[in-house]
Image 1 (cartoon, rainbow, N blue to C red):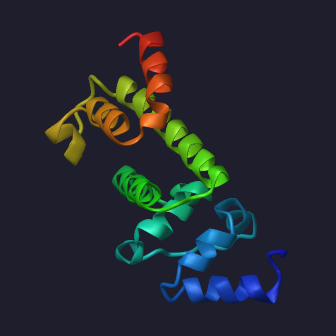
Image 2 (image 1 turned 90 degrees about the vertical axis):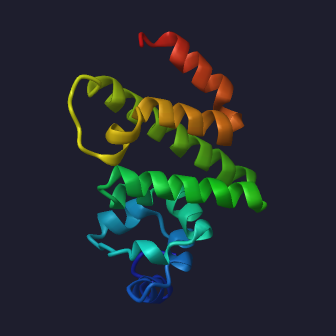
Length: 154
């Protein structure tokens, strides 16, 4: 199905009214971005299933807020733990989470000496919070995470 097809147009139109599931399950964010289509998501309308498909199909890019991205990853993780997901979707989820984890660790490392007024900076180290989340909730990546941490100079 090409982006110009009437089915995709209907899905995109429905998403403008808060019906996100079909959109995020069938259309990758890159495809929307390349077509110049921007969707304004009502964050409160995103449940765990929608978050899962948003994560695996690249929709984290649509959010500027690290907190919103973190919330989507947590919701997506909750969905995949409580539902049967395909091996391909699970692999994609783990890849996206791993990439995001590495970005967060590098950002944490680069900003250790900067004062920051965000909630994580006020209530704990971003690095510690993400290491805890990964260790407790995503055991599939634990060995990889341990190798990554041991290879870094913290």
